[in-house]
Length: 227
Image 1 (cartoon, rainbow, N blue to C red):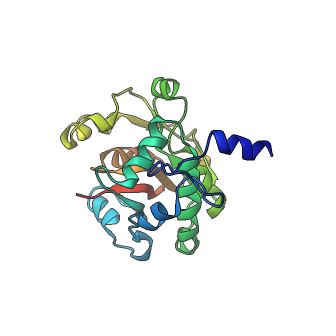
Image 2 (cartoon, rainbow, N blue to C red):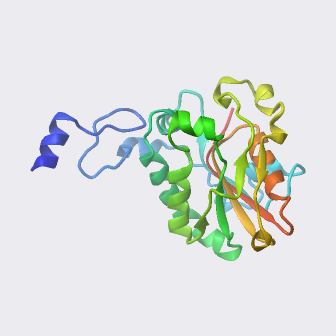
């Protein structure tokens, strides 16, 4: 009864279009679900995400779940997740994509899921890492440990969304480092982030992780920018 009263006066709205959600809808409405631009990267090994890193870093797998377009549904979802505290969006996308990735990851299963980290100052400002719930949902679906201790961001920088593509790539190679022990040797790490743009951040994180002897890298993101 109380729940119905709360929903009556404070109805839940879609994170993609702000329409009022129906009783059986979670986070995003049915029309938005049907209109999400799926990449289907997981169906092809040499997909466009994989090709983004080809010749730059050795990756076992790379994929993104959705295409990110300016002023599109996915941009709205990522904005609400990243800046408005709607972490349930990451949970939804993580469970959804994790289910799609199960068969693929079964053949070459990573040992740990590693989120692109925030600098401690940025974490304090925002209060959360926007990829945490995405990573935890992937962890649950794929039965892979989630770890935030291995990869660290050593330099604070302004938000990437306010920079042009060239600005996002400058000086990024030294932003990350790893804190590892011998037990981390030879592991396969699944690196996750919200959106692939130039790929420079993920490349820098991968290079840091590849300092670990015998390390292998796979990359999975919520979305990939498409012009």
